[in-house]
Image 1 (cartoon, chains in turn green, purple):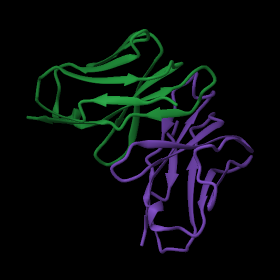
Image 2 (tube, chains in turn cyan, orange):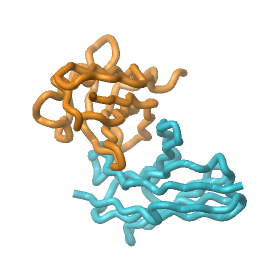
Image 3 (cartoon, one colour):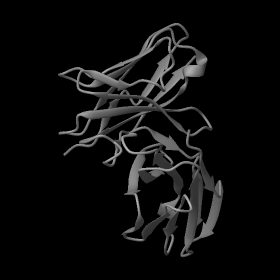
Length: 110
Length: 115
């Protein structure tokens, strides 16, 4: 069973700061997902990656398969980035089940 | 292309009643997943369905919970004789291919409150 750990649990940043959220998992995976859960509760899929790095706007996701670690970076943070960021993994080929971290609550202050 | 639709968005039931949660996947998606988010806890997998088939229900409680995804119409998550511990947010997600090869798109969730 894969264990997914995120850090930090809570993060407060000033507008404009560079933000990093970390995710570690215990067992080999086929893919890792970063999700954003808005204050209203809706969930948006940000990235799905199995190697390397992906970028979308001000968001960058990286993964190191050997170290079983992924990071989500937000450049030039803005108050509208305030949300819970969730890491989830597919554990192995053919595994469609997602195992989720508990999330990182980000608050960006103007 | 509308996203994943869930209804109702909020559902209040008294202990012992039945709750029916509906999920309409994105157009062209034949894979549906249900997840539960208990208060102050992370999301947990419940069940994975394809049209007319339950593929994996290993995350679903053995009693009172059932799911279906008929040939026509939405996927239904049914909870019989609800108890207070069933109060949670229930999210549905869909994908065009199995989730380990494709992004899952989430619905807005149904928040169930059991009085």
